[in-house]
Length: 495
Image (cartoon, rainbow, N blue to C red; front, side):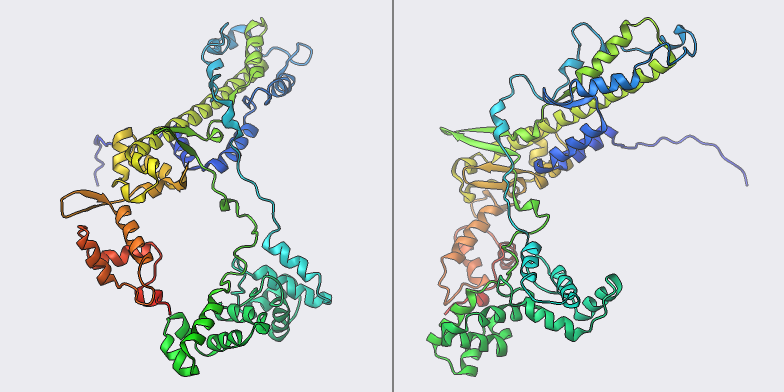
């Protein structure tokens, strides 16, 4: 077998570390950016935040760490061995470019610093139930069972785990031997907790638990419980005729029953404070203000932190440059300082590029959807895809996608995810291209205005849209309706 040597030419596309870092920073929401910056500040003492950041402290600490004296260290070679450390760009009289390495201009509007992340103090769902556990007179054995059950509830307040799994968890993790009958008895106790409906195994049980608390309210509650026990499937599918005939109810009685049931809460734990739900609050990345018909775009100040190179680190390099003795220990310290300063410059550059990319992208979106930002009317939104913004900003489509998927803008009409403004186009009879967002809004309005006793079918909705000039098929109407979380006509029917 002969070995053959040949030359090959390949065209490969590779991302630099800086590009990868920028892509990661673009995906970081404003609410989490401070945490990312905090990590960098902890890792790199040459980077500081604000005028009262690490200035002085970090510098003095680093001076103590790297200061050398002739008594402590002997020169390890001649001066010429260490004369090749170039620090000229760091020690110029006017501080050169290093002094300009900060993410904020001196003219940055400090008023924007008042934009804060909303904060809400509340008791978590688990804490609320745990406090009620303390009111039960349980022995240690049953208390451990109760803690396990409460800890097994999901965010909606349901117990979705099998009794056998809870028994196993208690045995293997807490060395508590129980049987399913004991667990069931404790579950019955927890189901008496507030909010009503807690610790149910399914929706039917959840609603029945809530009705049990309202038995004193009259006959309609009793009938509602009976409907849920015997005709739950028929009720969920709105087969009201079967319920009326099966229980011999009048229209008025059925209406009262439905009124009782729809007032119940299908997610009893959903409106209680939950652990680690920071995303319950939206922190806008941009603010758009309508100033007498002229749109003004500003970036949330949290996206423009006041970062800069540490004065103390630059002073250390100046001290080194002025000194006559330059031994190995000092050279190692200077190399370390240079690396930290370069790393800080690199991170500041990434934050700057992040700010620029965010503003350029949002500005292009604002111009394309200017009429919406002026009026708040979804029917005036223009068709817009990622490619449209990429072409206007000279950014890659993947970059635009990262910005659109993770950022929010606050307007006078509400706060929207940037992804909201993107939609495909649909042609009209006149050949005009309109946004599918416009069609969805019209479809939503038509369904909202329908007679709920005779809801409109998808076929009828399609005909109505076609009459308005929108070329759309029935299956597309069904798809848009599902995207709007609107059920089929049969399930929208009311008495």
